[in-house]
Length: 246
Image (cartoon, rainbow, N blue to C red; front, side):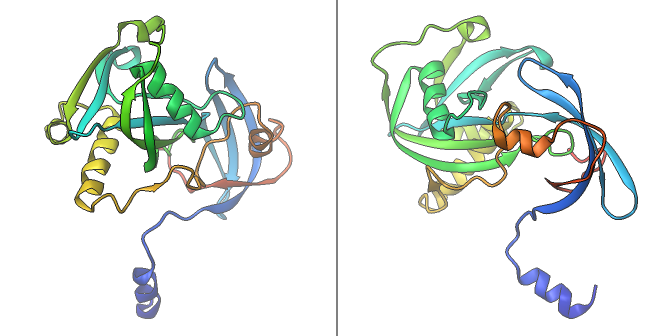
């Protein structure tokens, strides 16, 4: 790379770059209850590339912090990994038209019987960008108090265990690799880092979310995935992804 160009690039803020690539085919391979699998053909300039990926509605999670800097955690069974995981409350953005903040408030109430008076964006991340378009936003909730009525839980959630754990203890558990849920790991480390900066890194609760997944059934989703036919070239927001790019 030319020295001048390298210097210019190094001066830019570190940030992911959204690019437009031509998608020549988009096929629905599997339609699931919550998410689908799509096969798309795109071109980065050296010929067609085919990738299968999970077409996901996206999700939100909530790191609820009380006045004593304790984090509200839940533990529940996760069948794919055969673990009873410690997690923070989280849920899918699978309700058409639901605002992400409203979804986060709903999940905190449903999984923790809690509500909060102060909400901020703590972190945004892509869970597995080499194999899924799932985007997840973590909110920080403070001013936490019990809801007026407990929520009636079903299925795996009926067996939820809850615990308030000091943030510092959560950080220790993450660094010792005793807990591995991604929302918990990222949320705890982001909260610890933001606290050290006197919370100046927090985003507004309604901050823009450019990488948000497009929920199934919405006009934006239909536009993003096209008709599912194998013909026709259409522009599509994507990043260059390898087979092992997760």
